[in-house]
Length: 336
Ligand SMILES: *[C@@H]1O[C@H](CO)[C@@H](O)[C@H](O)[C@H]1NC(C)=O
Ligand SMILES: *[C@@H]1O[C@H](CO)[C@@H](O)[C@H](O)[C@H]1NC(C)=O
Image (cartoon, rainbow, N blue to C red; front, side):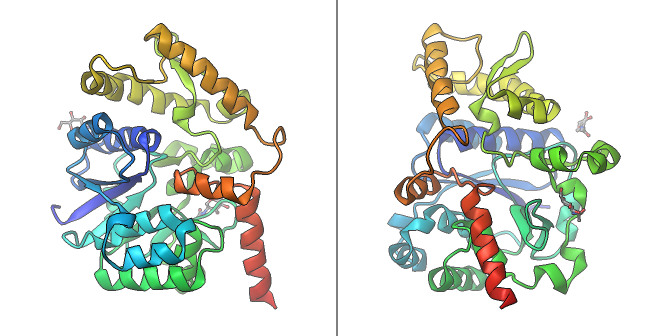
């Protein structure tokens, strides 16, 4: 239907690559809905061009540049930059209903039936099932709701520092009000869920419809050898969910990388696939050794400035200790 859309968000070129794969996976499963991607101003021109070939609508959202309430909210809460950009999805009022999906999700079958659900439908968060995971949710675009969300954000902030905290705060009756708004396990899959709930996965995994790569290491942080069909990177992460990672990389290397090559032309870029230029491989090696350094336990906790920077770059650490501590603190205040 023309007035319904899947919506995603890419704040930088890495998340843009995720959005390309997500868009492709929705198309490959013959969705009848429109595809919309919101992008931050940092997304490069070649990536924007590729997104335009996959998505019906590519909308640049520059909260800092907008003259509206979002700009004012941003002045008060600069730490919530990425969140404000995501909330922008409520302004897409030329659609009557939308399904938002994070750019680190991958669709494994047609999920158009999600549009039968009402605002706000989402799957429980694997870390705390009384909160929903804001990686996939059904909503109704509305300027009124958008305004209220911005107001909520500025007044209450976010208990996890990101959009999941804001949305759970605003739609706070989700856990108890209407069970129809709880999406079943098949929309709720994540590499972490699979790891933690292996028995459940063995029972329901065959029907998986969406994978959400929740971990610290996103699919695009690995390297891939398309000939050998081999993924390399942090071993623990690779082995926790090899099938879905491979699925992501097969789709990315077969249908996204060729488009990127066309757009970049002679300019070098880092596809993450090892078959390309030597200079690219050297850069990947450097990137890999950096990512090894940032593994948990090997580094002191990042300063709040660093964390803030990460949020702003779209590298929200939802599963990190700060998010859990904040959720716990919030729950403690409820219980008091
Ligand atoms: C999508 O549609 C095409 C053309 O109608 C069909 O060949 C293909 O099998 C469909 N794909 C899926 C996953 O249903
Ligand atoms: C969603 O996943 C979590 C953990 O993986 C599980 O505990 C929960 O029961 C699932 N939710 C539903 C509605 O199946």
